[in-house]
Amino acid sequence: MNRLSLIIIAVLLSFSGLFGYLSYSYSGKIGALEAKLTVCSNNNKALVSDAEKATKACSITDAVVKENTEEQKILEDKKKEILSQLDTPPYTPKDVLMDTPTKRIAHEQEAVVQTNAQSPIVDVDDPLPDDLVSLLQQAYRNSVQE
Image 1 (cartoon, rainbow, N blue to C red):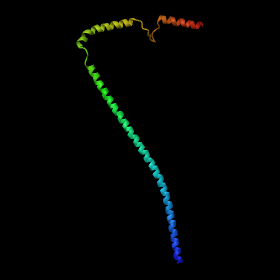
Image 2: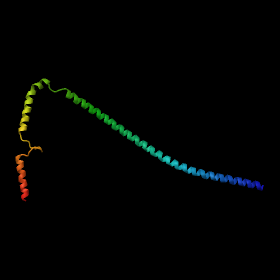
Image 3: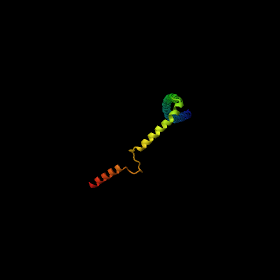
Image 4: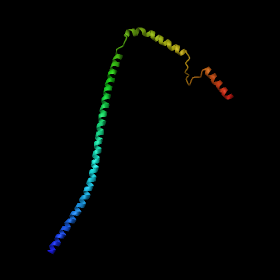
């Protein structure tokens, strides 16, 4: 019996050592899995918030596109209206042909009158007018005397 009890004690000790080692190794694996689970949970929460943001962005984009298409329709309608107004002349071509020589002569006379009048604008390459030259000479003399 002594031997049998020693064998039983040895077997029990080996089993308890085996179970202790297994529980230790599994507890380490369980800790690593819990850490990975926490990371996955945080990532899942981030993905959910990103999906919500993307949904909101899509709804905003849809609203902007809808407004844009409505504005384009309004602009196209106005464009067609203006083009139709431009296509229909408010006067008859017969009246235009009768007044054309008179208008051309009046326009040419106005151009001649405008070219005869002295322009206040002086070109850089043209010589300066006499009154401006005398004014500049007088200013130079005054500055040299002082």
